[in-house]
Length: 364
Image 1 (cartoon, rainbow, N blue to C red):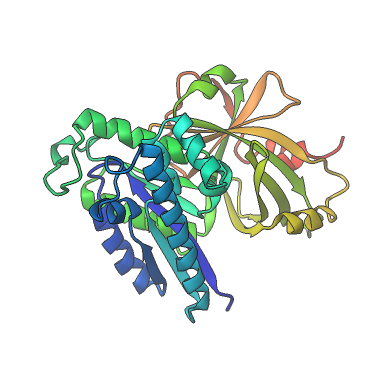
Image 2 (cartoon, one colour):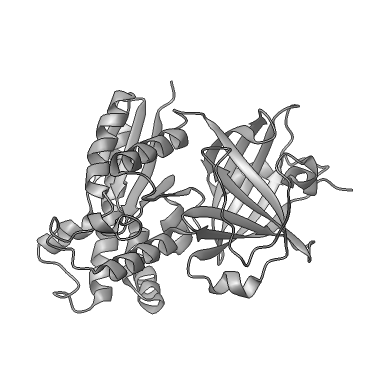
């Protein structure tokens, strides 16, 4: 059996249940046969040791220390995981690098990127999945407290604001799930467990994706929305056997990209088995030599939008000027969807072969 190592982030606003979630994850996934490794929260380590935004020369100087330590710890945990005999290893990060962005303005974040020779795409997409626990201050206000954490000082309004900034920092990642407070706390933990299990393929290893044809969106509204992030995607289909779809994708922004290969097999109009592998740039280029000659490479701009704890992906194509595609992945195909009022749905096209990217790529 080939070793599987997955690295995920558990993040969230103040009083969201993150500490309890770590114990829950250890118990749940150890029982499922995983070796569960935890990368402890870096801010707590530094601040309790005396290195803090208020003791360093500036917030930027502190953030440089925090990000560099975070990256080092994750690298060493990965190095350790690769040496282990376990077949299934889950690396759980108690917050990730992009959490730091919520505590900086854009200028400060740019300074940290430059100082550490980083780029936002690599830092954000270095993780396989992100799970955000919504603060109790949003939806479970009576349980919001600062009493159980000496470092917590935010009011309810400040906690909600920070929660949104954290979501904004991760918006753009290809696998972001927001766990809200629509159930009791045990239900929240069970939902988190279920979402992680689904990501790992332990429960229902298929996507339930609903797709909608929408009117061409207000790009300015999307660009200015605090919980929206634009990603540039180039998607090329490869030669494959009947019934299977193989594609390679370049995904990123500002000249910085991550590369993937995806194999998909449909079960019905809404459910698909999907497996994805990260590629190096050279591997991606080699795969392109096996491109399907009957299909063009699809170039599109994807707007990742978090709205009402839902994660929408809006694809804008250069050859369409009156319409676009909106997609959302669901754990329950009967779940209700709340669309922003700025989005105007023409009709649902889930399962309609005419609106699949593979069809749009076909040369006519």
